Length: 351
Image (cartoon, rainbow, N blue to C red; front, side, top):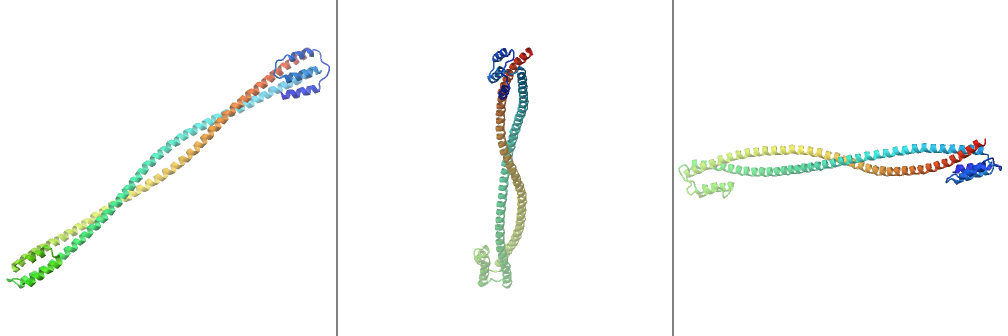
């Protein structure tokens, strides 16, 4: 009603003292208007009672009425534009919330899948690590066993070589002794030398040394029998040494084959280990990215929800303020319209 007050003051400033015909009746009708806007009716009453021309009042009230209607129309247009914009903003925020919620669900599902894959990959990596450790332990055991077998073979062959060397030395001596003493018994000193030689080369407890030492009759026929036994033993030692060589060669071949198989398996497991490690690294990076994205999504969800609440509250407040403002202006327009109709009708009657 500020415009009405200004108008009233302007009218009051140009009012005359002498009343036109019929104005007292018009004043009564104006006072009879039921309105909350008594300031307007008061000023209108004041203007007319001070002798203001009805025609001028009609023009001023008409201008005021048109201005108020234009203001209401502009307010309606502004409200329609603003409320449409706010409605679109709310719809857009709802769509953003829906998309963010769906994306969060998708990312959570992806994160769950990545975690499951990582668990499986870690189990594979642990299994490969165990297999590599088993291979390393097996190779170490094979090398230790091979070293022990080689040392044992070397010791046996050295012992066999000593026996063979002793037999190669003793047998010719016995043969020479037999040739020299054909038909006679060997001297006790010769027997003693042979026994000592055998003991020295083969050991005191060697069966050959014991057999020769216990021989009471050391004649040619006895020595020949001993020579036959020693030659038989020598042949057996030679055969044994050949067998040992063959077994050692086969053991070396078997060992190299096993080492090669272990090397091939180790290479395969090592490649699988490297591939699995790279997959774990890649999946771990994927997990980090997913977690970062989820952090951003949760932040955006919270901000969007708050903005949606604020926008809805603002729209409700704006709608309420518009409704109050429109109701008040419509009431003012109604009052001014009634006053305008009265003064206009009066002016028409008294032309």
